[in-house]
Amino acid sequence: MRNPITAAALALLLTAPVFAGTAADDIHVMDPWAREVPPNMKTSAGFLTMMNKGSVDHKLVAAESPATGMVELHTHINDNGVMRMRPVKDMPVPAGGKTELKPGGLHLMLMKLKQPLKAGEKMPITLIFEDGSKKEIQAEVRRFDMMMKHDMKHDMHMKHDMQMKH
Ligand SMILES: [Cu+2]
Image 1: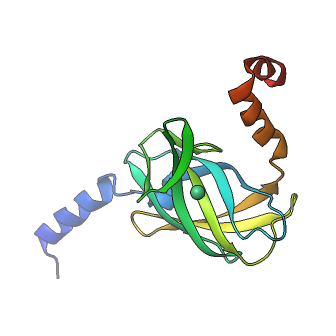
Image 2: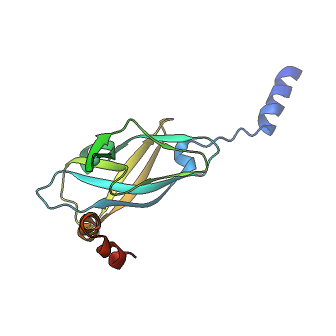
Image 3: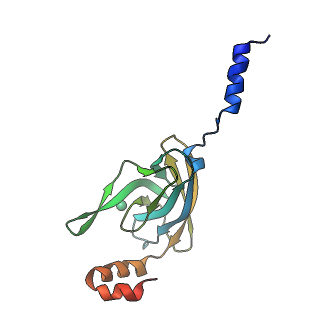
């Protein structure tokens, strides 16, 4: 039995651009890494760049990892010259744009580490977006000492900034 209305509706459905990717499809992750920490430290931070290749805005709303007991979304704020961390509800990634997580800014706070993070190892992290879609990434554990010194010198002696720029 043929119902012309249903057929027309179906035709419309098939021709309309019905393909709308999930946030996990639209978001491309570049250069995910986590900071190496001494064995006695139970907290570290993860960084990455999210690029939104889709046509709608997305948001990172949570993250988890089998290597940690908890992951929080954090940012840094400059409170009268003192850098403080503060949890954020989400991290927006505008359509066609990118959001960078980097030292001194947005980061994934890796808490209650179940094992030490050693440079060169990979750490799986699952990113969870506003539509519930998930993306698993492998963050490379890296040593961060150099850059921390850099940051401190940057504050104290401007000259060093020139020499250490790369
Ligand atoms: Cu933090």
